[in-house]
Every structure is written in C-alpha cells, then in structure tokens.
Length: 393
Image: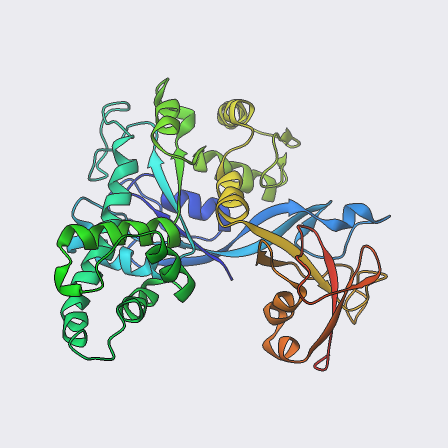
C-alpha cells in the first residue's frame, strides 16, 4: 500500500487533517507535540469508477455512486521544530518515520497563527512561507546526516580493489526508501567524484537534496485557508511548486455531519447539502466551509491526497477481475478490487500486485473493456478492467 506522510510543525493541523482523512480518533490539541506516537491509518484517494460505464453501479463498499475510493496509508507523527534533524523536539522520531513514505504532505498553517516552534500567536503574525523551505531543509539535513554517519565506512571500503562507489551509495540510500533505480537515476544526473575521500559536506548535502526531491516529493497543504489573511495562500502558491488550499477542520466537520445524517457529502465533493436540523452556530460554521469550497473547489483534504498520489507519484487505478464479461470476481461481485500502479505498468505488474503467486504463474491477460487478449508488456491506463489468467487461479 502506498504511504503518504504528514509533515509540518506542531499546531499546523496535521492531526486534524489525519482525522478528517481517516475518521480515526487521535489527540488534537493546541499545544506542541499533541501527537507523540506515530498515527498510522487508512485514507483514500478518489477516482472515477468504471461502473459508470455499466448499466448499474458496482458492489464495492469503496464506491459511492461511481466515486471510487482507493486505500492508501496515511502517517501522522510528531511535529517538526527547527533543529529536528539534530534531535530537537521529537524530530528524529518523525524523520525516521519518513523512511518508507512515498510522498510527503507538508501541512502549513496558512493563517500565520503559529510561530516557527508551533506556538500560538496572533493570526497573521507569522509568515507561513517560512514553513515551506523549513521542512525541506530539515529533511535534507536529516538525509545528509545519514550519509555522514555512513561515510567513514564507505571511505574504508574504497581501499578495496573491488570497491564500487555507486554500489556503496546504493547500499546506504536504499535504507531511507530509495530504490536502486532511484540511486542510478540521481547519479546519472549528478557530476561527482568516485573517490569518497574527495567529497565535502556540501557535496553530501547536495546529494541528500537530490534524494529527497526524487524519493520524498512534497505537496504543500495550505491549511486553515478559511481563516488565513488575504494574500497568504497566494504567496504560498508562489513559494512552492505544488500547493493545495485546505481547511482540514472544515472537512472534519463535514465528515462528522455526513455520518450523523445532517449533510449530504462525499469526500472530494465540490459542494454539500444540509439535509438535517442544525443550530445557528453549526449553520454559520458550515457556511464558512462552503465559502472555502466555492473559492477553491473543495476543502482541500481529498485534493491533497489525490494530487499526491495521481499527479506527483503518477499512479493509475486498475481493476482486476475473474470474469472479463461481467467485470466480477469468482463470487459474482462487480469490480470488487482496485489496485494503484505506476503509470506505464503492465498486466504482469498487475498480476504481481494482486499476489506474488499470480505473478509467478502469469499466462496472459484479457482487456475487460474490449474483450481481447493483451500482451504482458501492454501499458495499462487509468480505469482499465483486466482479467489475469494464471496457473495460480
């Protein structure tokens, strides 16, 4: 399962975002380090379900009238403070948790109501743009520190006639979530000395930055957009490549109201309808959420998750079935499963994603939309329905 990590300083709204995305009970408070132990839960990305191309809707619990929700892991841990890479606050605990993350959501307090340490200040008193570079820098220095701690071992190994510098770096960097392909690609685009003795601290920091950019891409979540002073969100959008305006608190309110039957709303909708009795204060709060939705096209929680997975990580959703005619599994359930794959993935990749035994016994695949056999190297696309024929099924 893909892993999405929530980063940011204390009180930026990470735990509220986590709760809104997972509907899990976590501690949410206006003081530093509300989250001490890592929270791991399941959130969902939203896409168009292929059942919309059928006469009726599918049987999957994760489909709501053609809105398909695909699970991903969401990780929320202690907030970062300046010097986190040196162990200040609970920084090392957070940064080490990033090892297996595929993408990072940097939750920023767009209202400017918390200072660099996450302590409450007057709204607008702090410049939230500072938090964009801050998280990147802490992550870069964390990775550089890991390289530094392993560099003496690499230098000793370089004395051997059989020493391979790229292999030595790969051994270290795969320990922080980089793949062999990642390391090869980074080094291919980098001018470097193959003698580790010739490397400076600056060289290692530059390599760490390249590793972070490739293996831990960041989406900035401009949280508290509903109470942010005019211009703050726009300045954040200028400061970072990918920014999603957000009100995590508003999304949580809508999710709770929907669960109580007070509003009609699905995560990621561009609007909601009040269907039950609400108090004047509740209506006022919902009106503020509605204003953000109308301005930005949603609360931002679902958009941040979707953008991180489908746009940044370039994933597609593919639906494995046992019957390519009815798009069902062995029990007749229509479109029971959805699998996230890298763009360009093949039917054989899908087979291994379903189960290693299915992949090992792969024979061929059938396109459920066209009813024809497709080659094992055929690139799959978003929304494909595929039957895998294997000796294991």
